[in-house]
Length: 406
Image (cartoon, rainbow, N blue to C red; front, side):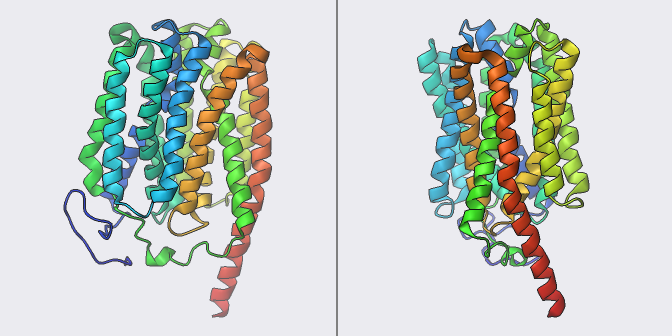
């Protein structure tokens, strides 16, 4: 393995010219840890929203908008990173984002009304967004992106499964305040891993020829598919816990169902690790997205406890089968991680728009309208992703033919 740089500065922060091997175990572990910290609130968002309603006295709409405010903070940072990605030391930026997210969680303890809490969750989201964007971008520049994205999602979902399982008990024991203290400490713990992260995109020689022949229109259509898919995810995920409770299902049963769904998510991400590129990307992405739509369809009406658990398990399992392939698809468009960064930006824009839109639609048509809209967006997303998948397949075939002829 050779890299385009030679500076191997081993100091904690390094510099923009510092080069490390991002494919080593310690580098991948560091990226994975940071990747779990970034969405530590989002991945248990349904339980947090329920906690705001049950323990803090907020309405369903207020709780949804508080969750949405954090995701708008995430999206705001994600957009901004596109302008500074290759201008500053990644380690320094990640350190700043970790501190901002940690402090934001602590300061959320002092907020006493919905408006001030929305503002503080927005600020917290600014830090979380930077952490999440960089974790996906850094994993996207590793050589085996499909597999490594799968590892990352397995870790995130393992955390999520445990979190959703214990959240009702945690709320009862330490309240929402105690949970926020945990989130703050967890964010600050990421500072122990910063020194093992890359300081820049440090393009591999093996990857330097990747993705410079795709039309801009193809990239834009693909990114549009990413946006529609993640708006749909944001629509349904934010009220998943509340939907179950309002369907008459016991709170702990809902928590258990969502926990089981996280384990199904682990299975889905693990399948991406195991199969990697064996079946290409069109098949797993189509099955993952349309199968997720079927899962949401099972929530229409008033689901039973069994129906709810089956639906959320199918949805979460296929959501997390989809994500490694989706991020790897983006990573193959260019060698410096720019498309991954754009894609992750739109992912979090979708996660911000979705809850806000769901909160606005809740009084109009309830959960059935929200879920029906999400199903439609899933279908649109598949259609928009197909041209990019086919273009990459064609490009790969041409590259193989050229190599053979050479």
